[in-house]
Image (cartoon, rainbow, N blue to C red; front, side):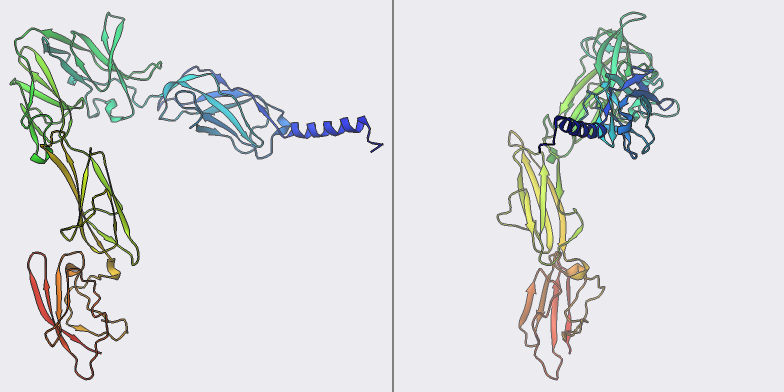
Length: 489
C-alpha cells in the first residue's frame, strides 16, 4: 500500500471512466428535413429525418438504428416502428433516415425519435408535426348531385354523403376510419364550420359542402355544393311508431309511418337505408331513424330515437346449435355476457329446467340438449325481451359413433367388438329419447332418457343359451322403435 501513489489512483479512475464512455452513445433530437407536416397518399409517402450521435466508436458492429413514430398526441407509450436500419449500416454521424408513415395516422401532433440497439440509447422526440394518410383524395358527391334542396319552415333537411362508391363516385364512406367536416359558405372565399359526421341536418338556408378531415393537410377530398332553402308551409312532418316508443321487441317489429308526401327516404343513424322509400318502414332494431319527405314545394324531415327495449348478448364455452364434446372427467363452463339491465337466466337440460341454475354461468358435466334463456324486463314491467341459446353436449364419436342401424346382437366378452350396445346418434344422450331394455324374464333392466351406449355395464351370467332381450326406443316426438337384442359370448 505504501507504493500506491496518487498518480496510480488517478490513472485507475481515468481507466474506469474511459471504459464507461466507450460503452455509451448519445443521440441528438432528430430534425425534420424538408417538411413540417406529413400529408401522405398512395402517390407520395417518403419523408426524411437527420440525427447525430457520438462517439462513433461506441457503436457495436451489429448496431441498428430504429425510428419510432408516436401517437397523434406525441406520446411514445404505444409507439410504432417506421424504420429499422441494417445491422452495422450506419456508422458515421450525422445520418439521414428515410421513412414512410402508416396508413392509420391521423392527427396534428406526431413526433419521431431514434433508438440504437448496441449500445442501447434513445433520443428525445422531434418537433411535433401534423400527419395524415389520405386514403381518399378525390372529389365525391352528396345529395345524389342534386344542387338544390328545400325544407319546410320549422323543419330540416338531411344532407348525406353518397354511398356506395363506384367508378363515378369515389365515396370516402368506403373507408370507415375517415371523419368529416361540414361547412356553410359565408362568401365566395370564406366558410364556417357547422358539423361533423357522414350526414348533416340542415335547419338554416345556405350553400353547404363537406370535406374529409385531413386536418391542416390540403386535399382534393371534398363534395359538391348544395344550396338548401327554407320554404314556408303549414305542414309539419312527424314519425309514428305503431307499437309506441319504446316498444317491446317480443311483440314483433314496429311500423314507422311518416306524414304523407310525394316521396320518402328513410335513414338510420345518419345513413340512408337502401330501398326504404315508402311512407312506412318496418323495423325491430333500436336506432336514430329519420325520414326526408318531399312535399312538392319543399322537403321536410322528422326523426325518432327508437328504443326496442332489447339488449345484446353472447355465449362463451360452447358453440350454439352445434354438438359440443365433453371429455371424460371434465366439465364445460358456459358463460353468458350481456348488456341487459337486471337480466335473469334460466337453464334447461333435455327441456327440463335445471333447479338452482339462475346465474350467467353454468358448469356442465352431463351429456344432453341444453338451452339457456336471457330475459330483461322493461322499466314499466310491461315488456320482457328475451334471447335463447340452444346447444348439445355429448362425448363425440368416442361415446356415440355414427352407426346407421340399431344392432340386434351384443357380445360383452372384452374383445373390443360389440362389447356394448351401440345405437344411432339420434337416440343417445342429448336427444331426450327414452331407451328401455327388458330381460327374457320380463324385468326392466334399463330405463333412461340419457343412454350412453354403455349397456350392459355388468356381466351377464349365462351358460349355453344366448339370452334374448327386448328393447323399446321412444323419441321425444313419440316415434317408437322395438326389437330384440341377443347377448352372445
